[in-house]
Image (cartoon, rainbow, N blue to C red; front, side, top):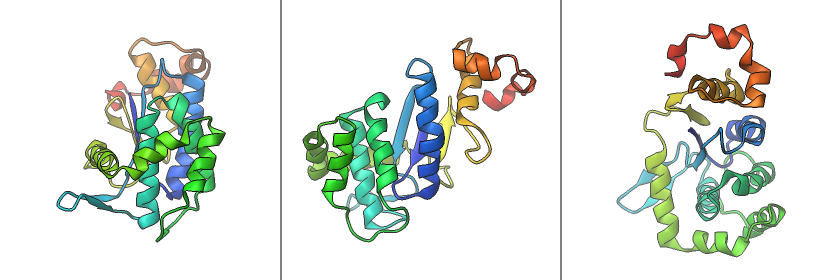
Length: 201
């Protein structure tokens, strides 16, 4: 089980998603990697008026909602990752005080062969969007201190220094799983055999 907490407009999140999450999932697939991406990050949810305050302004909150809707409508990573990749490459990183034009999300949906009206319906429906916002806030660990924040089988990894493929392979192989990419890269290495297992328990 791999949970990745991210937020829109975050350069570190963009790099982690594009260089680690997507390649690792593409290599290992759903049978090895039960991937859950939570687009909320360092946002603060205000239950009293059911709104959020986001690190990178209104633009981030709005883009987070689009991404939450994308994943709710298309829950399989094999469906949503292509659109998410497009958004990471298209949306400007950093603070943004206005909502983005829906056409950005429509173009990325079309690139990923997804039905944009379904995603837009979610984004425009206050009740659905707010429920997803609450859910993302709840699913984001309270103890997280930055994003991206990745948890593999319940253990937080060092996103800056660890390789996601290696961490997932080690967790999978520890449970007796085998995959060609894991065997090829880590199966016979002293690194894998020599690592203290307590790190992954």
